[in-house]
Length: 441
Image: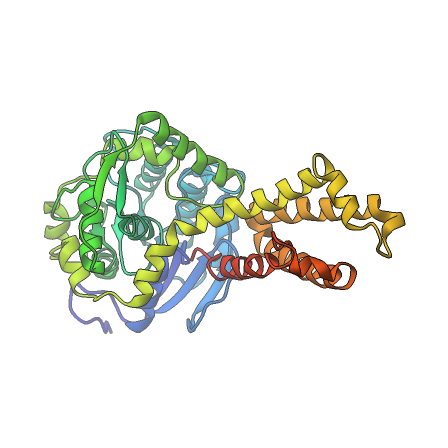
């Protein structure tokens, strides 16, 4: 006996496997499904804290699960699959082709073999019209792989998704809104941004047994806006006046995108990278009619969605800190690595001189070398995302060691005009602040 809310709604007590469950859409979808009485199985790339989530979690990397046999053990008893997995750009840790095309194709083949009929797959708006980067080309390949399967498939192609969770574009627009002088990128198209709640509600409706299948829907908001107009909506929501805008020269914009690429190679996930520039140049617009006809959803505007959730002081803190974070994780590695290099080169004499007249005078050279190497290792660890937390704790430990050793060997440095020991205190605070804002999800 069916226990759904209505003929077109999702059935109660479904077991739904959500791929990419730690992302913006996936995490919110898992929470909504669980709240509505479904059993949720979260598929994530690496195990992290589930918070209050009570469902099951499986660890599987879409970029490495390239055969149907890898997926089959995780599909027993599953009623429906929702694939939210996606990566922006190829890097040492991410592979667009494996995640969007090969891994997705393996998943769809496994669903067919396991007898799972309902598969909802997230693509991206406009990929069927133009593929300016590996992101959109691989997304389209994944779409075609699903269309070829004997499944009750649905392909959702959302525009830029915004929501209350500060992640991806939602975080970027908040961060830009905190700037009194707003730099705008040249050559960006219009965006029909879509709200996260509308996207998740769409999935809940389309999971129903009586809902349509074998269709592709574009999920786009009701208004086409420039990036500056979207930022202006966020500034108004946060209670700040309109920013003064200026267009960045093309070469400056290119440098920023390349800087994002470099951060990606180091394991970070900045939203502004070369693929972003290529994708945003064509904009993110689409037709609302088929989506509305299939689901009855009336998509929200940016202003109405923001008005429904008054900003908190935490929202303002996040916006103000958003661009401070990349600055901190550029400055801190530079500080530690440069300090080590200076100690071994132009500052060698000063470093040795500091140890004259102390118990380590005879070992002054080796001590300076050891300190310089420790500084450079700490800086490199902070720069590499996988080791950045350990690097920050290492920097704190080294700073404390310098403060204690300096107090014992050269207590006079506390009273020195340039404050070589006194400056350790704000350095420690900055590292603790960096630890506090390290997480991205």
